[in-house]
Length: 388
Image (cartoon, rainbow, N blue to C red; front, side, top):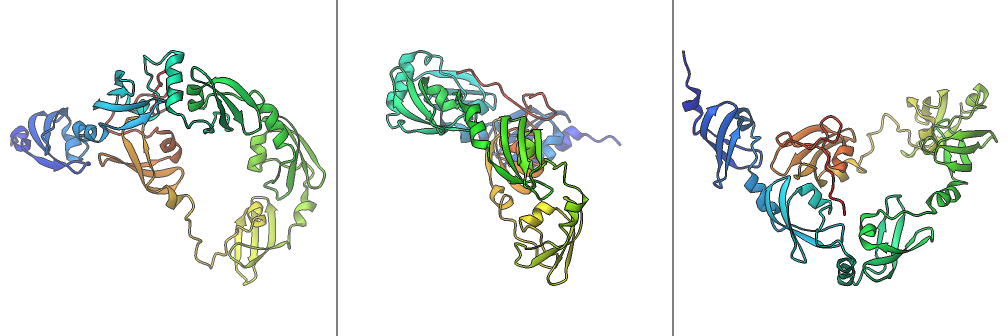
């Protein structure tokens, strides 16, 4: 029996993910329908499958929330969204009256939209004058160091001082705002600051940096006097540098070692197979198997008969965190299991599951109904900011 889907589905209503009711007003086929939202907005040429799943986006609904939004661009000027057609097509107006069109909303949120009339020194000097309180302003540069403005010069130039005392003169304020000013003494400073740093390696021994040539070539000394040359600083901070003289006798000396754990109960090592596999017996007789020795040293072995400690560190703090994605829409973390598995909800109500926190922090979580700008990796998105 023939079923006329066109007449059957025409006028069908459903609630979209943004909470608005939408009605089918034209049905050509399952891949080409028009829907009208309750506010009168009409979205054309959509899929019926997206309609049934609530995935159709009301662009006007999003635009109303974006219009009038103000951000400081990387050149120091304020800019306001005056027109929002879609995530990669907005118009902004700078404080000097300049209007630029057809920009990406993600670039706006990052402050990466350039004012074509603000390319000379006079414009930069005007910005510096408006920010009369920027003397003493501090910002973290790309190398991770904090720099502070110590003098305002002419034509938008400033003198800055890094946290290691290095002073650079006559730098552009725009570059300071972007964090792109380089400290020429950075590598020398790192070498000086990192020599003498001590950490406990995964075998439980303390190691100290005695020579730092660069981040990929350091020499460490273990507490037993053993020298391990040509190691990376990354391995050092991860505790991955091994002591070549750490033999079975050293391991046997660990058996019987006692320490009070963070749960308040004393634990004793009763078996030591390697640094990543030890058994600990608590004073109440409970045994915890296959634990790491470095966690034993820090008192982090948990007594299995006690209730698990509350994890209020990252999980609770990150739920509710919001950030603008490269698709131009704001996303909020609604579930955080671990850094490799989070769920986020976009401002239109769409939920995506099992994403990484790293991609969330970088703005790389894509909206399933918005075509992302490819970053080169699978399902990632990226934008190339306007040069300032």
